[in-house]
Amino acid sequence: MEILFLIVIGGFVLFKFIIPAVQQTKEQMDDIGDASKYVKSDDPIVRDAVARNRFKHLVEKYKKKGKSEREAIHLAEQELANNPKYLDY
Image (cartoon, rainbow, N blue to C red; front, side, top):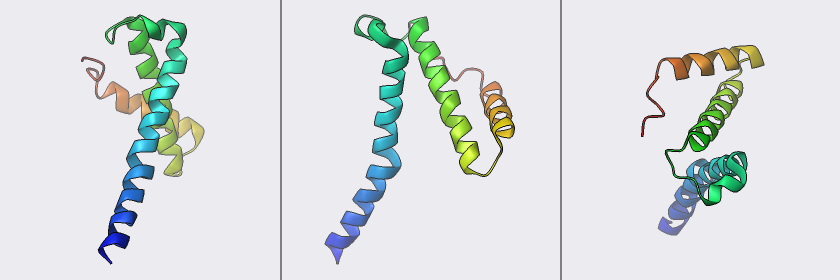
């Protein structure tokens, strides 16, 4: 019984956290392109890629909640505007 419980919890963690994190990282690396081999994490190219990727995932989040494309974009912009220091790292 405990093994089944551990398998269910492990599957949940895998599909909820690990796979989306890997996808997001891969998308950011694709946005950065060949520069990913030599840029630092505070480079403007990296910051722009992170911002684009974060915006895209926020739009997808609001679409999953049943919002239209326009509403999702507006809500994502609003969420990012409410947190202006999200790129300060």
